[in-house]
Length: 220
Length: 305
Image 1 (cartoon, rainbow over the protein chains, first blue to last red):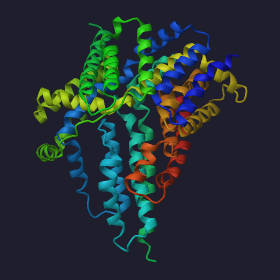
Image 2 (image 1 turned 135 degrees about the vertical axis):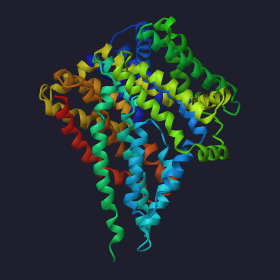
Image 3 (image 1 turned 180 degrees about the vertical axis):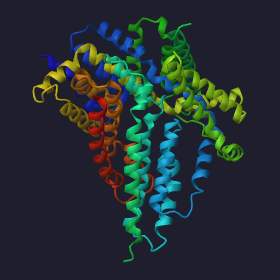
Image 4 (image 1 turned 90 degrees about the vertical axis):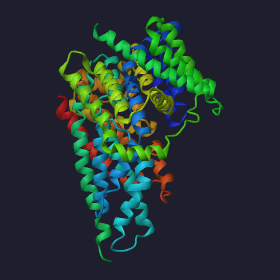
């Protein structure tokens, strides 16, 4: 019954799907997998310990936190808000696209803006609503669409550009996991192959947002 | 001094800032779980600072202890002193765009060190982080005390999520040691033939997206699916591992865009903006997510082989 070794995969999938405590789920999956494949408890603990030590590079991003803490307490987010609020006289779609560009560029430099809380709700959403309601007042449904698109734009920019930053936890996780699986990959190489998707995302979402404006321009 | 010794120095530094977080977590009496949280950071801090001198067995035990603390809900972010908004406003006006300068230095310097020296990417990140911190302190005229509090605040607010990626990578080690990849690839290859490059790429990217949708977390899906499908079906067939990892992960993000399981991204904005449609954000994301998934499959196929 070698399939019993897959128990760790089942634990991970179900544990995350049912929103159990994530740390406990991962630790349990590691223990269960080792024990199910016939290792002694001592051996399992040794492998977990060695695995954790060998993968310390994934947590290198902790080293960037003091710097981020210092610029944050000195108004980095406020400076970004001041910059973005200067955008004027643009359609909703164009506001989204400028924000998308800013989000992708800042992501590439590892500047983590808490987008939804700090920018989408207080800034981008009201700016886009104001821009879209110039010709005629917005219906409730349209307001909901704008909010949804604003939030979506933040996610698009955030997700597909974050791996452009070499010290991001995603890039380090990929490099370290590949190493664990027996294939050496440098973080810089992962960044290189993350560029095409970041660019393509910008083009596709840019087009998608420009088309978004049409529904507010038609004189009904 | 060789590269590994320099790297070890940076791990000690990480351990030290985790111990800062530990001290302040213990002192945070408003946190009902202040002891557990303090212990959590203390254990991690010790593993990073002196783990090299401990037997792996002990490290394994400490990881289990962290799992138990977390299961018992004894690790909480707690009350973290927020950034003083007034001071931040004032200094934002004074410093403006310069506040982004340290981050730009960090990103560029780490790439430069990684590409043009023999030190490698990891030491590059370490050196660049320290240089960027010093620049940030000079620009903002922050003293040591402020920097200490900014550090512990950031580390504490990251919480257990900060250690999850490393734990997932560790899980990858256990999977490899237990032969999980071999079993899944044997099972799947009973249905899909190994060796067909395009089929392997489609299988991996679609599995990344679907499992991320189920689990709500692309990092967790990556550890599992890359061991089970990505490596045997693509990398072992000659596919470039950097391409497979980079594009595989973003294929997973397409899943994140389409699932209510990723509450931080898809449900939080609904609540923040009081949207009428609970799935309003996801509905805006699905067309882009599906388009990108198809494009990434093509891209991985072209770039990996």
